[in-house]
Image (cartoon, rainbow, N blue to C red; front, side, top):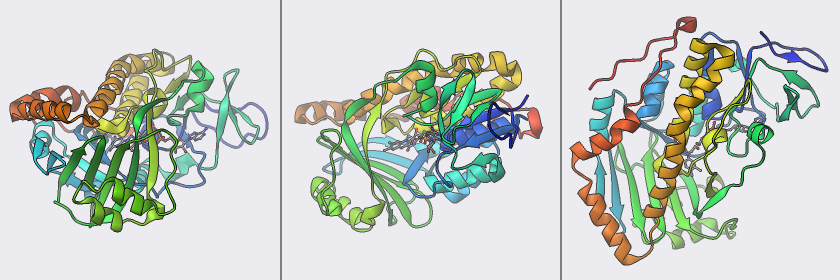
Length: 400
Ligand SMILES: Cc1cc2nc3c(=O)[nH]c(=O)nc-3n(C[C@H](O)[C@H](O)[C@H](O)COP(=O)(O)OP(=O)(O)OC[C@H]3O[C@@H](n4cnc5c(N)ncnc54)[C@H](O)[C@@H]3O)c2cc1C
């Protein structure tokens, strides 16, 4: 089985085409390669994205990355997260996350890492020759993949990992309206050491400031504020950010230590969960399938779970049945997280004083470690499939 160029010059062949080299697409390419499939990842950007901000990879994603043989490299290049806390704008702890305990229970720590570093690790493990840059997919037609150079390509299986605005998804199921969550996020990376190994979120009225160490002396920060959609920063964006987030003690210093032109601004959006991800030999993965608000820090983690489950399903059930098995295993979990993440965001962004007080009391009540462990089990205790093809390393057993 191979990719056949339907018209134009036939210059290559492969079995599976993954569209998009984000964390999901790169992990899918790696997992499919480890499972013994021929695979190429097609990316519209001219080169691997090395810019951008940071990311938290939680224990569930790290366990999947372990199955792909790259968890150690990710841990070494990022920062292991040993504790976490949510604090209010007066600095009082609302909730503590015993991340070190979670790591001991489920076998892998959460890691803060720069997105560019993660992309480099995944691409090197996949084999850079398997990623084709500057290749933009414009749609699907009559079983063929169309690219912007006017060529029609036929693949044995297409995996749409092309993000929230997925062309592959739109070709399969039509346009999907995005839902603005009501808040905007700014992200940056500062050369600062806060508390090592500690992930922190500070919650104010309609405002949040999060910090995550990502290795070396760098900290990734995200600042979230209720705002109308499609806003534009003023010329002195850092002064505006300092003023907007002045309620948080750390904000001034963090923003001072971040070059203004590296700050990324996004309206936070998702879309209503899909009831299908696959059609024939085309399936979706990552944000293309289940874009979620980032409140739980699970978007890329779920994309990585998709990647491993897809490869294992194709390996066990073949290219006809495999996509449906993959979808049945993954869709309920990912879709539930879309809802959960949106609810969590609404709770975190509360503005009313008395509602915030009620929320904080409730969250403090959820703090006993045994209760947290129980509530995290469904998330971190996910089954990690084994990939046997191509001499794939077996996943480490869970220490429980
Ligand atoms: C503010 C914020 C903070 C976040 N924090 C976290 C976090 O801490 N932890 C976490 O797990 N997740 C986090 N996420 C979510 C995470 O960023 C996404 O879930 C993740 O990037 C999805 O990966 P993906 O590979 O599916 O899609 P993407 O990362 O969107 O990658 C899609 C790729 O496809 C390419 N592409 C698009 N269209 C085409 C085309 N037509 N042809 C060829 N290539 C194409 C794009 O160039 C891109 O490289 C956060 C998101 C936001 C907005």
